[in-house]
Length: 225
Image (cartoon, rainbow, N blue to C red; front, side, top):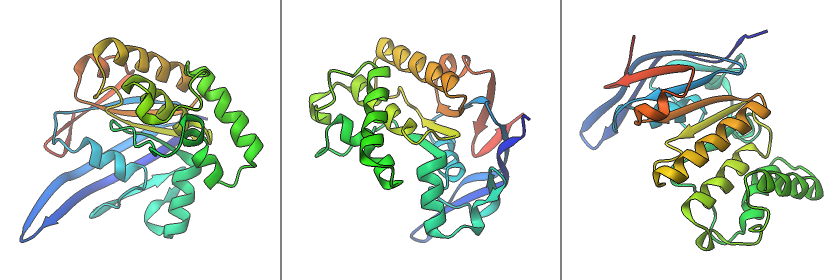
C-alpha cells in the first residue's frame, strides 16, 4: 500500500540571532509516500536544508509537526529520535562529514556499529556497499586519501548501511564537478531503486531536480504550488 511515509504539516522554523529573529520556514506542508523520489528545489537560503533537517529529526520546528511512519517526532525522547535517525533515515550531506581518523570501511560501518549490529555482519555489509559504489579497492583509505567523488560515494554507502526507509540528500553533488556529479546521481538513483527506498533530495540545480518524478519548489520559506 502506497501510504504516506513522511508528513509535515504547518512547519515554521525561526532562529533567534541575538536580538533578531530569522524566519526560515513559513507554513510548509509536505506529504511523501513510500517509494517516492522527490526533489526539493530552491535557491540558496530558501530553507531547503532546514526542511530536510526537520524531516529527518535533526532539528525540531518552531510550529507544526512532522510524522515519520506514523510517529510524531515531537513525542519522541532524545534517545528514541537518535535510534530513529540511525535506523530509519539515511543522511547524505554536501560536506560528506566523514570522520578523518577512520578509513572508508570504518566510516561506512559506524552507523551499523551504533545500531549494535554484530561486527562481522556490519563489516560484510560495508564491504558489499563499498564494492557496489565502486570502492572495493579503497576500503582502507582515509578520507584525505580520497577524491571528492570518492568521499561522496563513501557517504552514500554509509547512509545505506542500516537499510533505511528514507534517504535525505542535501545537495549531494554540490561540491563536485559536473561529470562526477552526474555519476554520483546515477549511482544514488540506482541504489534507491534497488533498495526500494524513499528519496528526498534538496538541490538548487533545475537540471538535477528535473530528473525526479516529483518536484517541490521552495521560495522564501514557502512551498510554491
